Image (cartoon, rainbow, N blue to C red; front, top):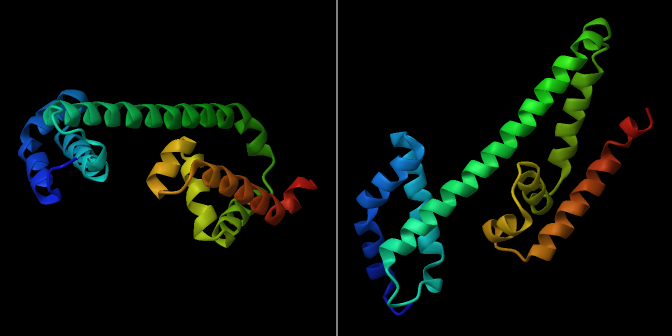
Amino acid sequence: MKTAPLDFNNQLFSFRDSLQGFAFSFTRNEEDAADLVQDTLLKAMRYAQSFQEGTNLKSWLFIILKNTFINNYRRKGKFNSYMDEASSIAMNESYFNLTYNTGESNCSVEDIHKALKKLSQGYYLPFIKYFEGYKYHEIAEELNIPIGTVKTRIHMARMMLKKNLRMYSER
């Protein structure tokens, strides 16, 4: 990109209204559309160096917006699918849980939170992002670290959690 950063940012924001309308066509909600436009503009600024001079800036922004929407939609779909499955399992097992409840489940949740708090930020963030459904390359991109480092940190976080929660593996 040969354009000065300030000039480039001004050009980006000149398309804000067009992006807002395009985002609304996907989200059907003003606030969600505004969030999507904001994410799009942030990504465009972050990847300004990859913009090729002579490329249609408006088209480039629309592609970023569309891809951001699709990725967010997939992420939400995975999360909702997981939650539906978890709810289904909980409903199927509710009969047994109603007759047998020693408070162990509350303790294990508390212990899991304590174990997570013991992780350093370098291990915690990649692990939580992965747990939330982000892909390795998305985590690497967001945290600005190599993908191999992301995989290693997630693996190490699992090992630390396993060690800190080994009392439950003995049951």
